[in-house]
Image: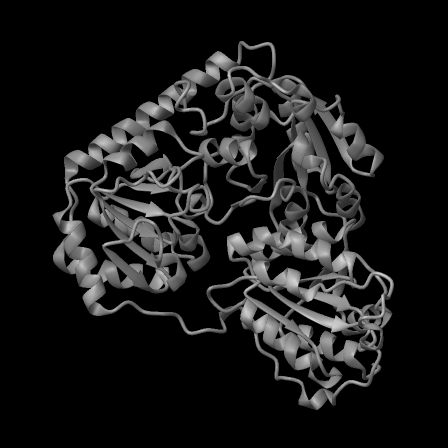
Length: 559
């Protein structure tokens, strides 16, 4: 193996347990040679953005740091633009970019860009190599920081003339270590636990409010036990959804802007909220309206920055969620905390009525001429116990987040805000997971990274890509129709009619188009058995209205 800076990078990645490197190749040939010789698989995407989204999906699904690469200039700019979702999701992605050669800086070199600064808003650590011999140790540092709670993306610029320069002795590289559990985890104080318990004991309408931090901590077992022992109902954000099973008797639904009507109403009535792993942001709290400002808010998060928010929690505790719940459970058992039984029964019965109403809506939708997403998700739910679902943002996140049942922990991922994320991210999730991965994305989102269906074909990834196709950006259409007095701007919203199944087949995948429940069921049966990627183009009703609060002021929501 040639001993150069590229080799130092490959060794640092190998020592950190990296197996897959996501990229769109661009120059920097010594790096590809070094990665190949180190036995690190290069997953070559169709754009730098999709490479980042694949790395992000892989990182979320595996809990391990995932590297992504872009070449100097426009490639690096594309990488930076794609890191926003990883920031929001606290996903450990390491972005490695080539940079202008040191001898060509400020000389109007081809593709020269002051690129380091554009990574500052989308990373938790942003570095640049100044001396070739520092490259390997800086890569190790970037990997370590990405995996250190609070996890998040990191970035390192390497001047492209450095890759072929002599590297340091391999013996001086950092010893092997798995960076995923690199940091000690914060524990709550005894006084904080006692205060939290006292507040819950005095509450008449307590609620456990679950965010993505519970999933990140792997604390779903402790959460379920706390609810069972205390008799306190559970509601979750879309991010917290994979940390609680739909079948749990105390689970009352998804809260926030993408939510069930019932869960939001119960949250509004709560007088004490134990917020676990949620940053209490606008999406989770429906524009900072839930919980009520009169409620006592107890917030637990491993990130101290999350405790500074508009709710100014009565008690804010910086602690690992799993440790906090484990120690709180000890106190609950000792003191036999039990929430008011009438409140729990009220929450359960309201949630049961919502479920029954959902069934009624399903029956009504079955009589429609156009296929409803309700029907599609009901059919898809037959596979809920055996798949991991990856959903795009917007309406796709609302439909799946509220209506798709969680029958397995940690088996639901969604774009936090980047339209189009789900398609390439599902490929990364599929690389990280053995079970079948199903992507749910709209036709607007699918257009971003359609070419990466070929990437799935090339790497023989058996992902199922379901495109909910209404030939429009329906969220925008509904905004104009319901909130702007019917002032619909079709030229800003509508697409041509595209058969995404045919496009998938042209790119080497298998595919089928569905315009009815029967056709979708048949396509899913084939897709679940397929050993290669399968695209299902589902033609849905443009008027279908999802479970979002955006239009509550002008119309009554059904779900």
